[in-house]
Image (cartoon, rainbow, N blue to C red; front, side, top):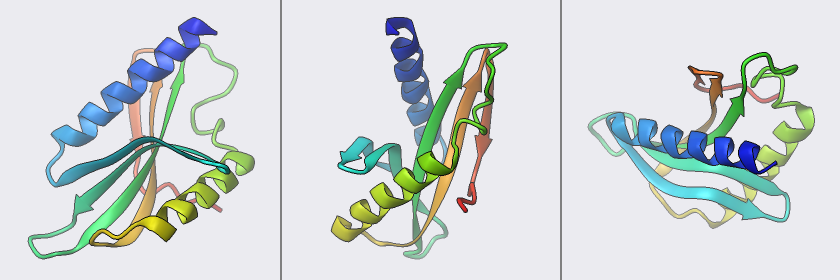
Length: 122
């Protein structure tokens, strides 16, 4: 369990650094928790030169090579429901400039990385 926790934490740290290395991202929260769940990372992204901002809720997943379940499969409907409720709670307290939002998945599978922007949650 400890090794898995270390892998998850290291993956979250690298994902955060990756987002911050992209233009126009501003970090708001890491491991935002409420009674309904947790969102790994939350950013604001400037969409253009004006004042158009978007909230980006990021789910970070890490899997070792040969894992039974892929990172995408691990975000099942129960996890999606918790993410939505947690995002709703965050939004109820948010007073920033963003007027739109999206959910992204960033994952590490062995030594490979992937990013699924605007992951549609059903």
